[in-house]
Length: 102
Image (cartoon, rainbow, N blue to C red; front, side):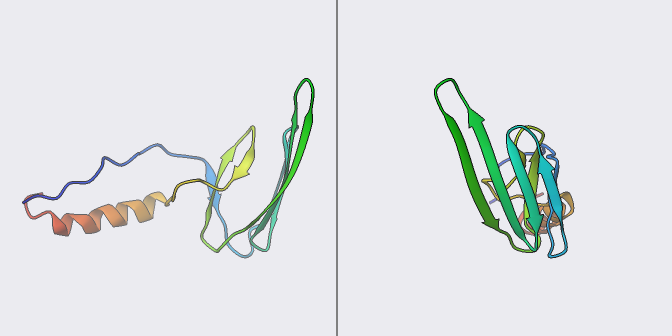
């Protein structure tokens, strides 16, 4: 019997892989961010007709974590597991051993 997988999403996303010496700063009208010592501190701003919101968030990251980049919101922790292209190709190549007819 053959083995199958879900077709991988091959969309490439901009971002960075963080390590203990990674330092970043980003600021625009919506967000102010600083990354140092694997801690991402973020202040977000939103203003609508009848209210204003200011949120402070702190993310404690691990070496190798990936942050995605978007011009509007800056660097963000992805909601799904991410991988470098090199690591994804290694994983897919390893799966070929399980598909005897592939």
